[in-house]
Length: 543
Image 1 (tube, rainbow, N blue to C red):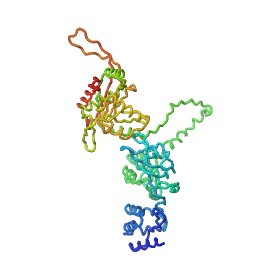
Image 2: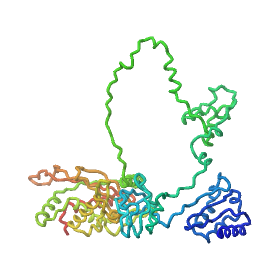
Image 3: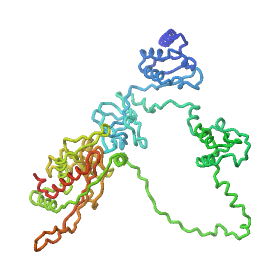
Image 4: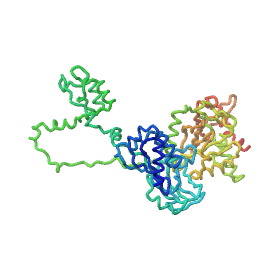
């Protein structure tokens, strides 16, 4: 009572009007009720903001609520169309708690899907405990908690745990175990309900009582009410515009009348389908009834074979992001392609020699990565990125080659940092470790984000050649196919008595996709020439 009288007297003195806001003290300051709200005392009151700012000194929660209402002009909307001296509950009384939101586990993450909850409601946790597994745009990562407490409520489960925006609440945590029971019926606070009149105005349902045009007296017959242009427009929209008041001669409806009615939202009945009117015409002829009709039960229905069955498989977040980013790349990045055929026979001999002499197993892909890194070192113009905001090219200091790895959830490109400074055996160990953890979804964000160049090899899948899509902000990507055995003619030697015979070589096709804003044709040719030089003389890779 003393608190009520204090608030009432202060408001009356400050505004010289009947108090319209009453604060009610409870055991928790977060429970606020607006009592005796009268539309007449809220809207015309010139000291609305002052009353709200005065209440801020008495209650922090009241300050947040009322400042928002005063600034946005929502106080009138909250109590509109409500009976006088009604009650409105702004917030329910809950113990002190924290809303955990969907974290951004990678710089490019916009949405995430919770694949598995590691903790359940009522479980306790400490710093470092994994709350859930989140499927990001690149991999499935663990969401680790940074404090101690208890899980009071899980807000996203099942179908609601899919495609959650970053920052959206996913769980409620409390510090005290005795507060868990208060959140059994906790729900996220929804937006203020829209009034019935506003909802009716925003909905697409026509209001026949007010917007239906009245019947208009015309000087023309019904079949000539619509001018040809107006008839064509109305029929293309599927509407019957014959009931509109016409501005043409004799009350005819013009094309402008139809456009104005559509723009103003005037409701028009849907155009009657032809099938409904044509059906009686089909059944009208009587002579056909004289012919003996075959009973329907005796008609033989031929079997109908279906084409086949199919399953709709929803894309995961990684595949959605890959589709979006590659679509943006093909749309915004000016791609062009340069191809070159190189011989792999010397590379295959080197692999056998390393296994026999040093028991070191090196793949052809490792050799290609090493050749690319040395070619990037020799032609640094390809080792750059394009910044569309500043319209500038940034040449990178380090050579970090990304390798495209196919995983069950999609394609990912782990990075081998400082590739030009690594030997063949070191590259082999790095690639083997990164590819294995990529397939298990255990890569850290810094291990697959970034990179200055990319290599995509489909030779192990039997692909001879293909064109890869650039992965921005990188400026180039090398697409490598498999080696094929071909008969290669030898060059003619002038003056020789016996010309060398054609030989059989293992030929591989490498195709460079480059961003024309960063790499021009001459620079791409230099890079491909350097790549061919190193792969044709693999002994240089051991230096």
